[in-house]
Image 1 (tube, helix red, strand yellow):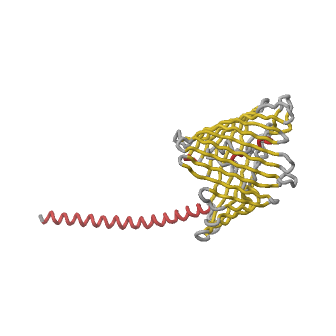
Image 2 (spheres, rainbow, N blue to C red):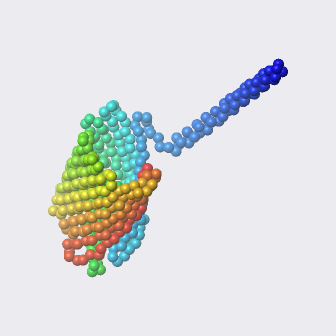
Image 3 (cartoon, rainbow, N blue to C red):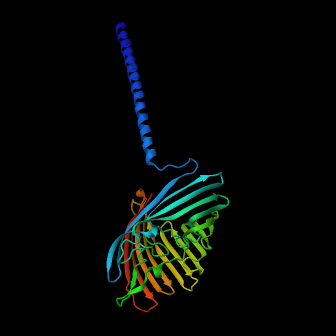
Amino acid sequence: MIGEFMKTKLSIAALVAGGMMVATTGAANAADLGGDCCADLEERVATLEATTARKGNRKVSLQIYGQVNQSLLIWDNGRDSDAYVVDNDSSASRIGFRGKAKINHDWSAGYRIEIGVYSAESDRVDEVNDDGDGSRLDLRRSEMFIKSKTFGKVSWGLTSHALDSTTTQDLSGTHVVARNGGLRYVEDFAILNTNGAASTADWGAIFDGDTELDRRNVIRYDTPTFAGFKVSASWGEDDEWSVAAFYKGRFADFKVKAAIGYGEDQEGTGGAVSENFNGSASIMHTPTGIFVTGSGGEKSKGDGVDETFYQIKAGIQQRWNALGKTTLYGEYVNGETDDVGEGDIYGFGVVQKVDAAAMELYAGFRHYEADLNNGVGTEDFVTVITGARIKF
């Protein structure tokens, strides 16, 4: 018994001694590893600091955002056809920087700078030019703001007029391929006469939809949102001004977005004042995904020439696959310019979201018809545009 007891004590002592040796060795190795790890960590941090955009201070935030939207545009003007790779100006490629700083519980201040990145713009190519204005950068926004939860927001700089986006209220998610108001592609293609001659008008002369006042150097005020409503007003440039009201809400199983606005400007009129009146509304039945969107606008120029357009779009949006929601749509557009003529567009298409990549895949077909004031018959025009937009 005594012998076995002694053997047990010796075994325990050996285990304890061995454990102490392992612990000591491990501690030493850990110390060495810690030194190597810290040195490696410092090197990695230095690398990240050298390759990452950094803020100038800790008080104002910085967010980098943007999107790339590239398409294949196929066209047929009745006598010729071709296919171009273009930057889709329905929702053009861009990169932006924005941020804000909190002043107190109610007030904040911030900024936004946005640059358009264009290559072969879809609204600048035509039947003999597949590059448009070529590759270029364009300053889209350079604005500052002060915002109060109680009193609203004041913005100034190169920013949106209140009238901007009053024609583009759309719940369907098809804006990327079937934008409300204006063609955004093939605007510079000529309308061909059936007698073999080229008309002096292009498709943009009828369907330009330039009834909005978009981004200008202005001061803008937005009220706080109350019960889904917001009112905006802006003034700047050469006595341009606009006012607009926006609404976003839900009734039972329906979602609704709407806007209406009025503005005056003198851009491109030789000093004469143009009046602009716009509106749009979109409604979606959420259980089925069925939607209807309508928009319209009128620009009454000081020279007596009026431009009008209206558009109706309808379809269904459902999650039919694991990628994301799929939207099927059909559209009709009517455009008229007093001194040129009138035209119609019939179209349909599909937008497929890829949620995991913040991407949309799309394809759209349009058939264009024109009735010019000169009474000469015109060739119909057909386009197919397909591509993808990815946001970051």
